[in-house]
Image (cartoon, rainbow, N blue to C red; front, side, top):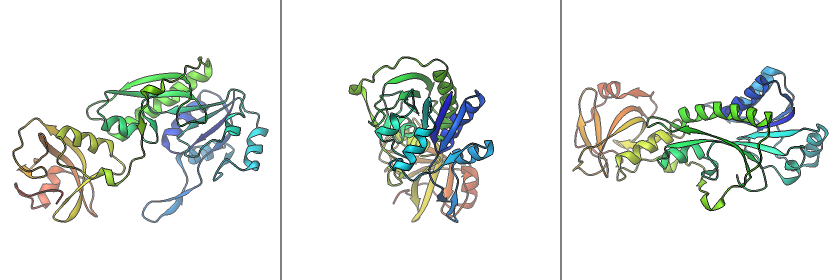
Length: 306
């Protein structure tokens, strides 16, 4: 099958790799322009671009898909289908109409739940026990197209956005290959069941200790690795990378250190206690709580988040 592929991050690269492994012909790969990244803010190629270059695929990085020259280039390829995975650019209707079978999107949720930019994180934050991949026939709406195929994954109590992402990426590659093998009929979404997965902001990753320990644990996992859940201690930022909720009665003000030992740091929340397991001080490295406590003079009764 003659495929156009559009995607940018590692989630999309996993799908591209699966399509190549299945023997499909990728006539053109579209990915976002290189962006500044890292401490030096040097232009960095996307994961999809890196894979495309490794495999010798034709590559394009247009800043948008609205100009006539880009549309003409894609039309000339006479593709059977366009596969889209976390591309990051809107596809205008005339692009959606180009391929013979239209455009298929690999979306990291069980649509219509969690339409939008951050379905993985929002599923964890909401306490969902399952999620999955939807292969969707794209239309002009935001993740509103008909469903071609879907597969389900359980969300473990220890899943972070990264671990769940990796499992979903593998499932996405598997399902897009399956969908292209025998294109299933399109089933319309029930928009009455839709929820919206808004883009994650750094501000919302600040821990609100008045929330329950279970809620904060979900936030820690949802914001790992980006942007990282954070609080403050002695006026300095403190990132929390791993934690565990404890079913204890917390009589202290939320954010108060309840218990400290050589390898235990427990903080009061609005309901229950939160045991901190992996921490990062400003300018430092991630470390387990035992290592952190060996070099940090923190005592019961101190407040985090002040």
